[in-house]
Length: 504
Ligand code: AHR
Image 1 (cartoon, helix red, strand yellow):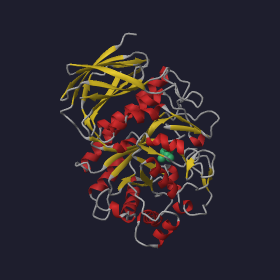
Image 2 (cartoon, helix red, strand yellow; image 1 turned 135 degrees about the vertical axis):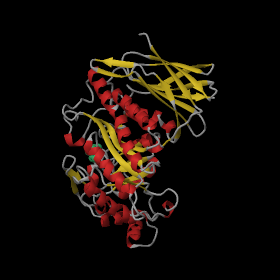
Image 3 (spheres, helix red, strand yellow; image 1 turned 90 degrees about the horizontal axis):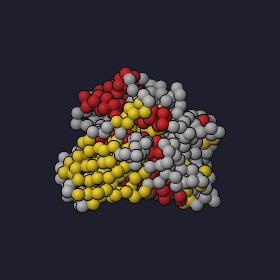
């Protein structure tokens, strides 16, 4: 197979915005086996665990340096009543959104905080604006964060945590235009102001530095309904007074086809190319909503937080359709890389994102089946991208060429570059073409490169997956580049994601 050639130029002297590590955030909802079994097995389980949280999952997630975990929903969040999930006696309730199953509430505030502590992450707590009250939410935050000897502080201490918890991000509702209460933008704005005003974080460590960031509900798709939503919220923000504020606007955008759901495995090049074409719409969507935000917030104080994204396919046959179980293939690895690159290119405005969802649900990092665990191709992409966390964007210019299949034409390659805190240059190259390798030749300006090596992730087929029986079908392998006279050359395999470090 003759490789096509793509010339790139990487100019390290022209750096851009910081790629906020929070774009690599995760989302863990009480949905299917996302929490129960995926994270929580209980202290009496035979599955090795620490205080009920499974050790294998914690070890795998630690390697991703997960910056934040959004919890408890999603749609579940707007029906969640935190008091049912604390203390020795937990209320047994229902989860009407997701399969109508029993919600034992054994995983509540303390268990979530223990989990994020075990994986070394931060809390992104989503408030119940749909069916809760501002008072309930305010009390939850007081329970979690105060250090003063209030009744709620004493209750938290009695439940095992005398020190205040840190809440890094606070979601003011979820999809309030739909499952979160079917609100109009104006109605949501007035509700959101009340939550922003009264739901306070009292943690002494979060008063000056590391203040909690409040994220308002933002758009959920393409078209006038969503641009109107962003207009209303951002116009409201422009006129905000001392008494309320927001630091972020959320955006939800799945790669999905509701009419004719794509399969997550057992598909060919048609579905591969169609799904990737659709995922690239993320770029336009971000550009459209960023432009509206620029009108009302030219200093870009409010971040755009894409706190639900990923591939959403048909549920696996035999699974509970309310559990949103799907396979995770090499197509998802490419899809993840394309989205992460889009976020990086919009780093000045996109300062957070949460892939949906972390374990066993939608485009997951990890799949479990009782005591078994398998890491997905998407997991490996997140692992390979760790060096990009809090790095500085470096522009890469290239003519991507094209890859065409049937009616679909896509760029043949995508790439980003960044400089990490130590000054090391990192380059990511995605080859979308599932049939042809690509020869990359990159000229490097502003850096004296000596060598370059890293990892590449490809697979036998576009729909290759890792299974419990064959967990290593899709795994990164080492790759090195030739470096000579300020130029770097390497060949990337078909349908691959490659990350290399340039040594100086
Ligand atoms: O991630 C699954 C669901 O998708 C979330 O609960 C909801 O916010 C979105 O519609």
